[in-house]
Length: 315
Image 1: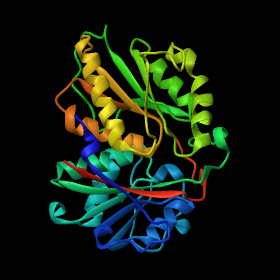
Image 2: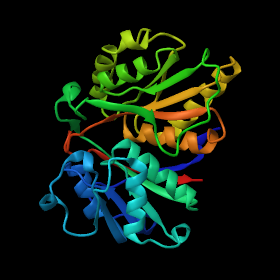
Image 3: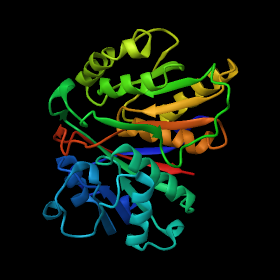
């Protein structure tokens, strides 16, 4: 499927957005990044919700003062269920909803979008703010790296076949080489493919990404640029990512690949591409999205804001 027919646009970093960029409900995940707080201020919405994810470790006196939800649980399904209960939103399918995924930890983002689709939302706007740079370049720490569990994300669990001899693992490879290694080791029987962000969010970030991913090459079992195991899609375009995943998936299935595992460890827009591909093509297939769950995540990893993108998903 060609997902590039979906609509995306760039929004001004200083505001003044048109009426198409105003919503009934705006949902953002709170953290300490300027690119999260600035967008929350710029957005025109009747209701703005701050999601407080427990993994960031904020104290109650650090929470935003208005419309804050959480923490409920570090289980993404329990968290999102409690959020919907507390936010008391009705007739979701009739509301114009926008999510800023910039501050979301990926499993919460995945399950939120899954539930919105399940509850009848047909159209959803998603915002992502790109950093001017990551705080410590390729040494930036995004999580504590203490993986306590690797499992399927709720809502993205497929019914897999007993024959595992031709299983495939597709990794959206980002900066965190330790997480890449742990996922690869967890599925060490799988054929492993990687998708890298090219073009990257910023010119220097591609080299930083490759430097880190190379550290995981032993676990991956192939060179970073081995033909046939490495693919590329823009780091800020979920629709091209979804299109590439669709192409690779069909190509591998023709080779009699049976079970497929997807693991988005790169940028949030790339993860959004994984979500869109799964919800469109994989819900009745032996395909799952898996993720390495960590105890905690860094509250601030970036400096500045370089671009704001809006993506429109249609289910």
